[in-house]
Length: 457
Ligand code: ARG
Image (cartoon, rainbow, N blue to C red; front, side, top):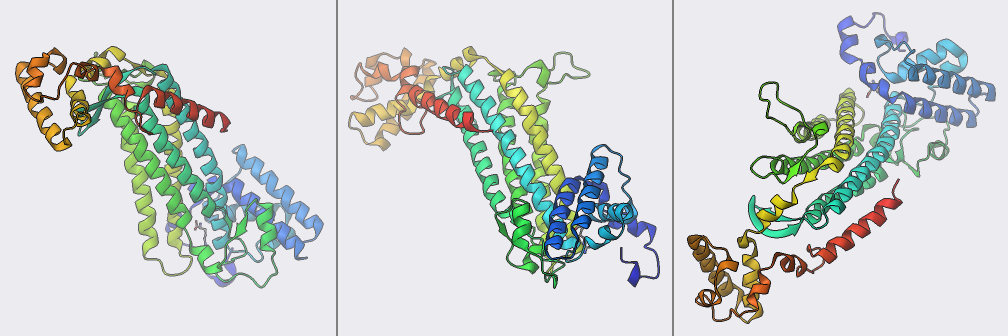
């Protein structure tokens, strides 16, 4: 492509070193879409005749089909997807193909391709996140009544409904969707016409190209447009955070599926056995998901590190953005797919969870609240109940097994109505503040989520 200026061929090792076709071929559909729009702008500027435009479009569509069918011979001596496609076009249609690159550089071309690609993938990933939200809601509905201990510091804290626990993840995933939608706004700007760095002397109608490609706006500074990868970093951050959420869900499942907890069973289809120990059923899907989070974070850090020392504007370093992006996209889609399949097949052992929730210690705070409602300052109530907890542990008897006389030794304020406080169902249902896990709140949340998710593609 640049033979005019060079007297020697590129060294073979340099060809292998600089090529990106082995991975950026994946951008081909967007490269072709972008080239067709650029050709239209050249046509509008009077630089391509209608027949030439037609030839370019047909040629590019033919190439697209060959790539779709795996029949297109990619060449590493042609470096990247942009030059492979342009060169094939010119060898097919001749003169018209050779006119296509006027007013364009690979610098604005690759920025465009990446934006089109990420816009597409953002939509795909957001839809998959919604799919997983649906699966979580389905499981929550199946176990509407299941109570389990909520944990802080991995110590039993207070009772919650299992759906409330799951809905926490639905909220996290919702923020992931919002974050990607927000990143999409900045992905969705059209860079073509920025040229290599300083635009072009060819009169290209950038707004026209933007409209053809469905962009609501064009980038505003040509130097920024060819060097900007903020939109990629934001996107990778969005995936890293979503990956982190899925990693935490994985950790919950690994714990809950362990013999020590036995709260849940993950189906055979989503667990693996041991080659040695016949009794094993391992939560590998969860563990791999937790493990892949390292990759998501690594890919983000890799891009930020690549960007941090770059002088303006385009530098070849930027080619290193792609493998990180492809990897994060492939992996998050896989994780979302397998999780969406696995969640509905989870069985919850509601007997085990309610046994664990029947630990009367879980109601210690409610007892302190009882004293507060009977006029004791909270700090005093906390101390009284602390002593009571120690006593009940020494006695190996739960609060319900203590007599009123025994209890009154700790505080005069205890009366017979106290025993209603020590009821798990009541304890759940009195948590009525917005966002707290009363049955009524949780039912309303499930209904609201169902309505939202029904509307989503
Ligand atoms: N393959 C290159 C990349 O991914 C395309 C842009 C190359 N531009 C250049 N001036 N060498 O960034």
